[in-house]
Amino acid sequence: MKIAAIQMRSGLDPEANLAALEPMLAEAAAAGARYVLTPEVTMIFPENRDQLASVAAPFEDHPQLRRIGELARQYGIFIHIGSLAVPLEDGRFANRSVLFGPDGAICATYDKIHLFDADIAGLNAYKESATYRGGDVAVTAPLGEFTLGFAICYDMRFPKLFNSLASSGATLIAVPAAFTVPTGQAHWDVLLRARAIETGSYVIAAAQGGTHANGRATYGHSVIIDPWGRIVAQLAHDEPGVLLADISAGLVEEVRGRIPALANARNFAPPQPL
Image (tube, rainbow, N blue to C red; front, side, top):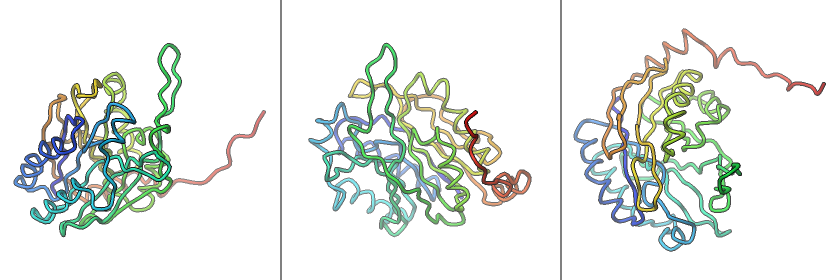
């Protein structure tokens, strides 16, 4: 199956972001992609919570998602919106991933589980949970001969989630992201390759890249990695673009047969205090 990752530089206007996305979706479909992944915060990359609240649309009958459903049906492909902010009843948002099937209907959603809350010496505290409410359910969905596992950005630092997805049948794991430049340079490839190796799964990571209207800079370098941990395709820059690769369900089976880590895993008790 041919798959595609779309790299974007999303700004503050959902309609402008959709307009930038549409020709790249058309390019991926014309190249034969049956599954296309977009980055985290595809529809709006907010400057702050107030700015996000002023433009984030309700999930039901969401105007940009409605258009994505039309495009999925027009092209007859799976389109996976890496994430968008969805208003919740407590005033926060869900960072929600949405998968459309070739019929244009939503076939799965996933709310980002792990939120980045950190108080780093010398820097301002960053508390993602003040704006977003984390999900609490791991998600997989059928995708032709593959099973798709869902993750978003910071989730990639938590192997337990990826192990759960693969143990539940995932053979391709999506990681849409808006990774910062310093952490991207240090950790992007190595974390994603590690998640592919330890689960024997393909990993596709669609990234935001460049300097955004909100003043933030993201790493780009969208990548597709095979179950052996090899990078099979990558955008070596932070510019918008389309990344394509052919993937094989047979390779997943072969790699998991050679290194049956999922099958060999055992439960164990935690260390006891000394």
